[in-house]
Length: 69
Image (tube, rainbow, N blue to C red; front, side, top):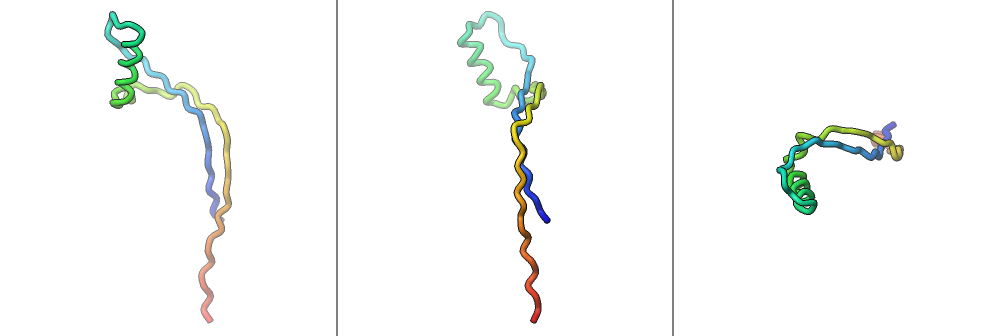
C-alpha cells in the first residue's frame, strides 16, 4: 500500500545581519528586501521556530498486474 503524506508547517527563520548606518526606515526596509530577493540573506537564515499546521494522508491504490489467460 502506498500513502502520500502531506505535512504543512509554518517555519519562522531569523537572520542577524549588518546594515549600513544612517539609513532611514524606508531605506532599511529596501535594503532588507533587496538582500532577501538576491538570495544574499539566505546564508544568514536560521530556523527559529516550526509550527505544525496540518497533516494529510491519501491512500494510493496501486494498479495490479494484468493476469495471464
